[in-house]
Image (cartoon, rainbow, N blue to C red):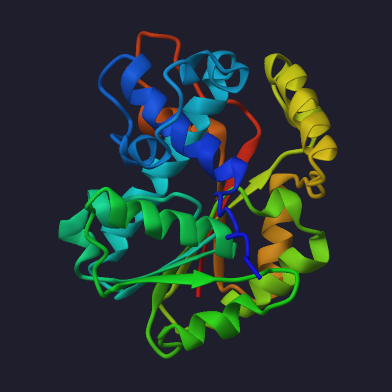
Length: 282
């Protein structure tokens, strides 16, 4: 009996995020906040991809995405002097290991995401001739059926050594209970570890110009079967960190991001107001 081979495709959100990073290089003024077009090469979209509505009308969201990527990258570079492990929870089409080899080669990198996304990514890296070094570990997890931490340990993660854990674009789709459980697990990692996790503000705290786009995004997420579940004020985020057992925590706001990466720009390229980072020490 002939069997049909399953077509493996990456998550739509991961694709969109990678394309935004590439579009920044292609469409926005220099200096670029991050230089990342590898995801575009992996995806190889149609020639008219820049005309997609989610590319053409989302400049502020694009700014948020590239600022987020740069913030994590700067944190990794800074912490790489003290840590030897880097965990990306919800890695999507992250390309740090391919772009920043001088730093990546010093770390054990663990990319955790849905099996189809990671399988597709690994296949495309190989097809395009990108090196997949031994210190880059793909950790496929079916989050509805498997424990991501157990899979991480099986992939070779050393719980006794400090690490940086990055988690962006994930909490929005989890319940508060699931987020707290994840934070509690991360808080048990080795002393000296650092967590950088993005959260999303409730609608009433967004800038007025960002509210229509957020309404469209929430509607689209519901219709796609992946509703947005969790929004937090900065005070609630810090309370979560405290309840989870972190000894030191702070939030990084959109205004902080503007000061870090957008202060001297003259092209009106500014991030949307919805995302807040929790940076917590263990």
